[in-house]
Length: 262
Image (cartoon, rainbow, N blue to C red; front, side, top):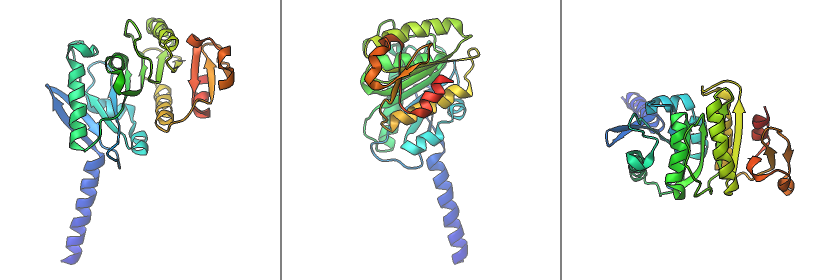
């Protein structure tokens, strides 16, 4: 009997541990959010919001981006909305308040303090990342986007470090992205820009760079070098003025520098 009881207890521990770190959902204003709880966390744990492609369900985004290891390393909650239709990338219309409500619900349920948010998105989700960071800049710790085609018309706050990537054959988005990138950098923002062969697809290399970049940001890594758009030359932080500000890429470590140059 004791052995049976012990086995049952052990099974329950495994079950609840799986629930703690597995996928969960919540619903706000008819929008389902998928989220993942890290293996361990404190009351100061932060939340990373992941936006998938157009009308992607949140659970697909979490599986595709696969930021689980990064989230567990830093005790980060992953949250992904199943936004659809209604120009949801425009936060002022309705989706901004819906996301804020979901964040508050996560913070309340898990006893988290209100801290910085991190944003990353692909395609229409990239549009979410760029527009949401402008919508609530005081909450954003860092943000990134791949294959984004819609940006704020003006840059009013460039305090958060940013990562932008795009396929070279996604030509219109490359041009639109560059215009925003120059404005963001000229406004004082630290923004890393990287293009890849191919088109609009979300490639593994872009996701790999995003994971490495967010890891460096969350680790508090400082800038070790600056790289120049197109030429790919690098200079030390003491020589940063050799690269015009609109072409300047902040590089946190050798892994990011290598990924940026490839």
